[in-house]
Length: 280
Ligand SMILES: NC(=O)C1=CN([C@@H]2O[C@H](COP(=O)(O)OP(=O)(O)OC[C@H]3O[C@@H](n4cnc5c(N)ncnc54)[C@H](O)[C@@H]3O)[C@@H](O)[C@H]2O)[C@@H](O)CC1
Ligand SMILES: Nc1ncnc2c1ncn2[C@@H]1O[C@H](COP(=O)(O)OP(=O)(O)O)[C@@H](O)[C@H]1O
Ligand SMILES: [Mg+2]
Image 1 (cartoon, protein in one colour):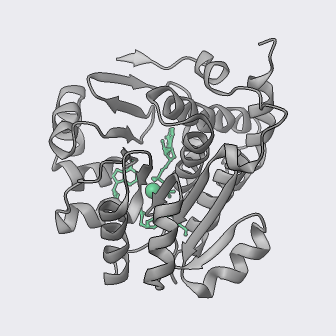
Image 2 (cartoon, rainbow, N blue to C red):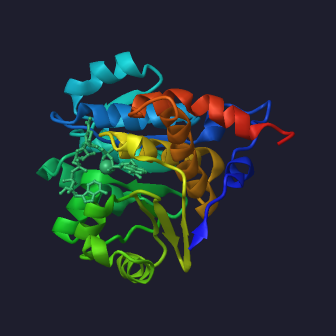
């Protein structure tokens, strides 16, 4: 399997055009959070904003609006129970990430279906966490024409693919992904996470067990959303997002026994500046 090299960061993270504005860097909708899991929505949207997404809207339960507004004033909020507002947001955003902290309620199931039924070719849908569990349990087909990115950990991939963790080897992963949707991109999260897209398989060799902290995957989803919003959907864009998350995690782990998602988020803009310089 191909090893993703650090060069991917220089390749994908480009300097910004002087005359650009927020509209050039992606409109991202994050459908996340529930009564039990407010933090997931915060980490995911904060990661998207720190990764440079031009405009981020969080669709969540209104009881979490205040926490989101205080912690991330850059993000806008909508109530995901409001079907009309949600549909408008699904149609108007280029990147839609759904799942972190969403839970598996009937409302959450309706949200996953609304995204898959109302997105189109020029959009990207990132399915994570509870969205993946719902798709597996309800056997919901991945029928949108939008670009699809699946970001399961091994437990979620087992639910989706029916592959036990010991059976999650390259060929099996590829075959099962193509059965779900031949054009979907899979980020299989684990120690040395892997990416599958069409007939290509690649993996990172950065990352460490200090990163085994709740919210670390929610953070990755936000970074992927921010990167796709700015740099466009491609295998390389997702490889760069995955690499950056663990590269920062490794730097922090040199002096910290555990690496908190919030500490990774805080460092993203500095690392992006480092890798975007014109004389790289
Ligand atoms: N602060 C927050 O609000 C947080 C909310 N979270 C949300 O909690 C919900 C449940 O997600 P969880 O992933 O915790 O629980 P899940 O029940 O979805 O997955 C955990 C199960 O998968 C198995 N598993 C196998 N390999 C694994 C691997 N490599 N990594 C993780 N689990 C593996 C575990 O043994 C366990 O049975 C999701 O909506 C998630 O986004 C979590 O992200 C944690 C932080
Ligand atoms: N031992 C490890 N080595 C490298 N990366 C790890 C390790 N443990 C966890 N991670 C990374 O942390 C993230 C965990 O994702 P996930 O389980 O979805 O977290 P959560 O749902 O709590 O946000 C993944 O990106 C995974 O690769
Ligand atoms: Mg997760």
